[in-house]
Image (cartoon, rainbow, N blue to C red; front, side, top):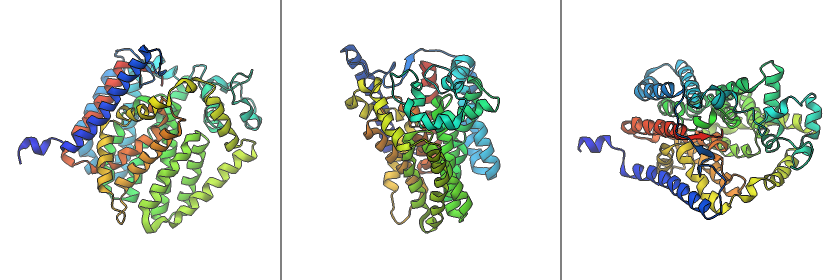
Length: 441
């Protein structure tokens, strides 16, 4: 075998990566054509919700430095460091990567002001003087064209998301900068939760392979700064707790995992699809699944608390659908977005995700339920369900962050000789996007 054959990724992997990149290119071309024909898809740089603005910023040298360091030393450190220090380093690396990407747009534009627009949660925080009273009437303000209609993002989510920022404000950390910092710090928990989950369900070697890929996750472009990044960190933590509790027989930990995942459903309606990841954990756990029942017990107090306070999740969900079609969603064509959404995974999860999914499909062994293929396929199932629902048309580069990051759980499926190549591709995608366009989130 020649040197080129040993160092070049397999042809099937290259085809998988090229396919998703090609799909993204087609979505961009078709979106431009539709706009020219007077049938806009309502995305500034289709399929991305952004505007073309080639630029550099104060975060540019730091983002490049983080990318180079993780590419250069990340795999080696992941292979030899003790586990807990490695997780701490993974978290620090994810924070540095996410913050540096955000700072490419500058401190004010990229960080401090991102969550202060009239459509965001902070727009409503100052008006919340009585939390129980707010929960009791929350659903009455979801529909648009009322004098007291909630801001766009508040109306599109259960009250848990708003409460997070209200609690932050009550703690004396009000304003856009603190909210942005909270989102970045919470979003970066995926760099701990995903490898820890793989380790709980599988092997240490498989978990270590995940670390550099969750640190240089391309979706960090949107994690910093958006509430969806925060959602990703919260739900990933819930999955990790569930996996640890189930595999170690720790009922209290499984209970906590269920509570965190239930709270996730009150952050965003779409996060009920995290049930696919929870089921993936149970499947991968095999005979050890029995402790999972405690997760349901953990969900009960969370659901009960919101319900007793006056918020009905189902009522809110049905009103959200009506509100959804009161806005721009009614003009976004399903026939375009049902496939253009999927093309966005080329930039949110990166081309390596397509390679991992290809290998996960070929690795399926029903009697050997390995987390490296179970978790990516569970994430893919959640993404497909969200896509087909029609309630995610555009903006999924941020909306699907809680699912997309789990595609990296199969990083061990990548041949060791190819991992640096795909790691470099992931970093280049993130840097290219952040420097060519100005994202809305």
